[in-house]
Amino acid sequence: MVYYIGGILLAIVLFIWMYKCWGIRKNLDKKNKELQSLYQKTEKQFQLQKDFVSILSQELRTPLYGIMGLTHLLTEEHPELENDRKLKSLKFSSDYLLNLINNVLHINYLDSGKITTKEISFDLKEISQNLINSFDYATKNSDNKLHFDFDSKIDQLIFGDPAILSQILMNMISNALRFTKNGNVKFSVDQIKKKENSCTISFKVSHDGYEITKEDQKSIYQEFINVEKAKKTYLGVGLNSQIIKRLAASIQGEVILQHDVHAGSEYVFVVDFITKHENKNETTVSKNEPKDQNLKALIVDDNKLNLLVADKILSSENFDCTTIDNGFDAIELSKNNQYDVILMDINMPKLNGIGTTKRIREFDRKTPVIALTAVDVTQLNKQIIQSGLNDYLLKPYNKSQLLEIINKYIDVPV
Image 1 (cartoon, rainbow, N blue to C red):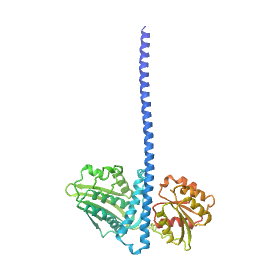
Image 2 (tube, helix red, strand yellow):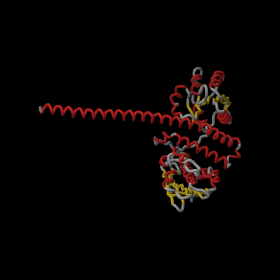
Image 3 (cartoon, rainbow, N blue to C red):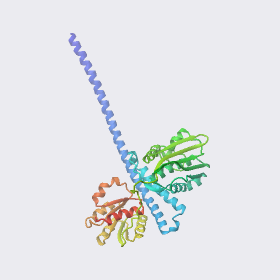
Image 4 (cartoon, helix red, strand yellow):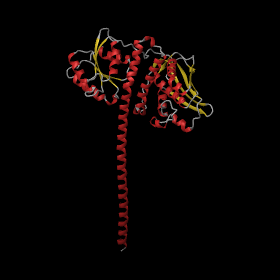
């Protein structure tokens, strides 16, 4: 009898245990499905974000190419404007915007922590002055005064990455102007330390604007996506602290933020620069002049302004240029003419540059075809290789970049 009762109790305990296990497993299955659904939604959202970044990048690059190209043509056709302050400010601002697109809109690239830096020779005083000039409009509209002081002890030419430096400094000044109205913003560049082949430079931005609360201090470098939280007095889109820190770290620099309720605030960026290379392997700008004889180029792009800029650049270098705005006509022209190089836009209606190049390669495998594109090429590498394109150049580009890539394929047989 005892064994019988014990067996019943054991069976009940086992049943309860199995029931609980079943309930736990059912709950786990439910949670797992919820996680799977959330993961799929996140993946979809991430892909949408990547697509959005790619499209936005392309939409911004196309008009920016026109601005940069026309600015270059103005200086080429009117040498008397080479030192014009407004034109220099326009060029600086467009260069800065290009760097902003490259380093900010490509969020995945930044998140990977892989920021490519350059080490080229540049005039620090000229970069700083152009930076100040680019804020003329903003200061006039906010009734602020932007003061500039440059240490005369700093060498005229130093080595570093002027694009990343400009991006950091522009955001520091933007943030100072944001919190200042009818006031003063001071930008000073000072040499802290000098060694035989290097120097330590301090870039200080201070202002006498209103008190910055802890909440405002965070908003100075708030996440880029939280732009809607910015105040109406904000004259520029500030970058978040993570991006600023990564940009600063990429050139071994440090940004320090200090503020005083009564005296305003101060941002300091400290970084080391090389002043003299011990070897002769310095990055220099080559004129990249093409061959003396007239060369024939076919330029294919559905944007009339892009055609104009590319045509003007190559015509000034003794190229005989033919321009066309669609892939179908480009194929016919390639059949009936011999070109030294074909410049091919990727994103065209009806027949894009990849499809056009594939058809050209059916009867011509020798003529170098170079893609000129505003599309994120990381998504097109495989298609570019399969289509028969020799290389690509990302818009916007400058004259030396275009000539360099053309000479690469004209001088060396394809």
